[in-house]
Image (cartoon, rainbow, N blue to C red; front, side, top):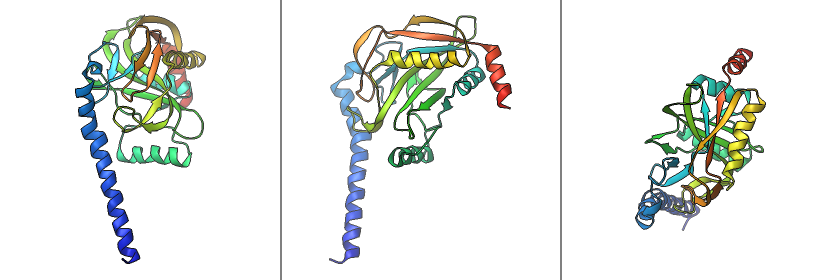
Length: 244
């Protein structure tokens, strides 16, 4: 067999293996997983997000009270970046960031769903050079008013400790760190340090959990409370003016 034919055969084999992996991990296994372990399919708790397949995701552990513009300005002032939407281009960029250990400050976050829709906003702060490790948080605007009568945004904050394969489906994903309370406190703490939070208060979350698992099969623990920050309108406006 000539070298060209061997290369073609190797390419076709690789393509077939990739197609089989995608079909098994993204189509077949999620359905089998739900059939095998339907108890973890949401709704389990009104303060838990879900994956697109209906698998229980990360719990709600943080909240902010303020307008959409206030959230964007507050995180910019705190040194966090808005995450890109998931597209082919952004997915390639984050893959290259991890593989080549180069920055991708606005790398996308995978969609999670709360009350039937995916996140409205997402922010991140990289740890190290690439998007392999990062602090990140997703937010959903609710129809409920928070303390001070402003719009209440509920969020799910977690630490991405590295890229790997989902323990449940084999899909490529970020694995999260188990201490969700530390990440919740970091988000609010960074906003407080930047002068963006006027006051904080707690609301009931998922409840105390010592052996939770998210949509990627990663374990987590939490005291089960959500920490809510009321954004300071004056500080957000000042941050916006300074950026111009």
